[in-house]
Amino acid sequence: MKKLLIFIPLILILHSCRNETKPEYVLNEDQMVGMLIDIHIAEGYVSTLPINYDSSRNLYPMFEKEVFRKHQVSDSVFHRSLEYYLARPRIIDRVYARVIDSLNVIEKEGNVKESDELPN
Image (cartoon, rainbow, N blue to C red; front, side, top):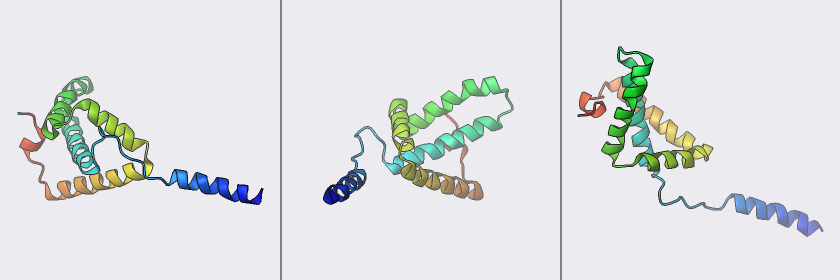
C-alpha cells in the first residue's frame, strides 16, 4: 500500500511534465510575437483615428487582414494558435513579455513606419 501511495503521485507528476508536442497548425513563438506586435500596432492606430467607435470597429478588420497578409498566415491559423497559447499560461506570459518589450522599444524609438501599419 505504501508503494502504491508513492507510485501514483509519481506517475501523475511524470505525466504532467511530459513534453507536449505542439500541433502542426500552431505558429511558433517568434511568429506569434511578430503577429501580436503588428496587431497591437494596428489596434492602436485605429483607436487614434478621429472617427466614432462604430466606424473604427468596421475599419479594424481591414488592418487585421493586412497583418495576416504581411505574415502570410490565415486568420484561422492565427486564432487557433492564439487559443493554443492562451491555454498555456507560462507560454503566453513569455510571448506577451516579448510583445510588450518590443512595443516599448518601438514606442521609444518612434520607428513605426507608416508603411508598416497602413494597408497599401
